[in-house]
Length: 358
Ligand code: PLP
Image (cartoon, rainbow, N blue to C red; front, side):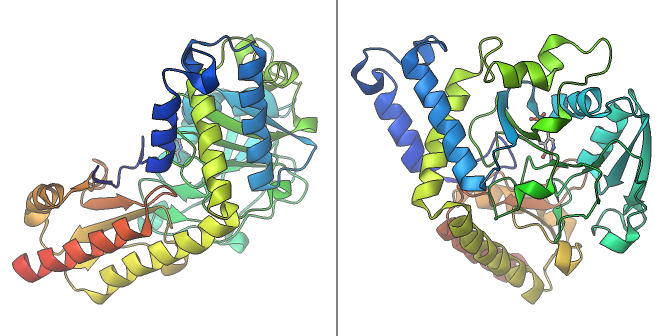
């Protein structure tokens, strides 16, 4: 296997893939795969419940929060959030820090007046606004933000204080990467395909007093209360993704939980940014305090060398380093499942490439 720096679907821990492979044909002596099992069987329900409990343990989710295992990706949440959380109000606050914030804003504008409480468009989305820069409206239904912008590589270094207005976070590319206080949030959501498991599963953690007051006309499948009342089994859930996420949660516990990952993730990011900053050949434009621990974009001094960098890195066994088409350059996504040794190998390759072509 090669070293995979994909932004998503992203690398999964080899140990977990091997475990899934071992169980694939015959799950725990039952003579069939977990994929072939009814979601209502007691065996599957126990897998599903254990996964939820492990996620609750890892994130220290308070009892007054529902944990939902849904489909539709983080993108469906862009509309589910206004449909469920407006609760009779007409406006919602949104912080704009880049590509994913903008997508969430555009979708919300179909349902309500969106108040942009801060934007970093003026610096081409290379920082996050500070708390003082947020022009929050105390009567807004909720405040939405993207703690980690996967494409720009911009991460908030604080959790916004929104008073009594519920805070909503798109944690698709940062969930489980460091310890957070869930009680600061009204709702947290994440597509699974980066830090949780395979694509096709979406995790939503929502405070229970916020659900059950949907906009008129909200489809049944877009109502959090329906999913909460049925333990995410109103219809057939993404059973394989949910199972595999459960294996990842157990793997995370073996790594010392989110607190353990935080120490490793900080170290991985620091050494990669240090390698970029120490060289005049590589550059990262993001304000130091807002540099993402998960997605590290960088450019080469000469963009004509980009294709060669990709070609040679692939030959060296380093995959998916090409930056997003909207920003160009390179991007190394170093989620939980990317081992520190992979970051070391990337740094070594970057130094070699610079010495050869710089
Ligand atoms: N939000 C963020 C921050 C992302 O990085 C992504 C990435 O794919 C999405 C939303 C969209 O997720 P999905 O493809 O699950 O809809």
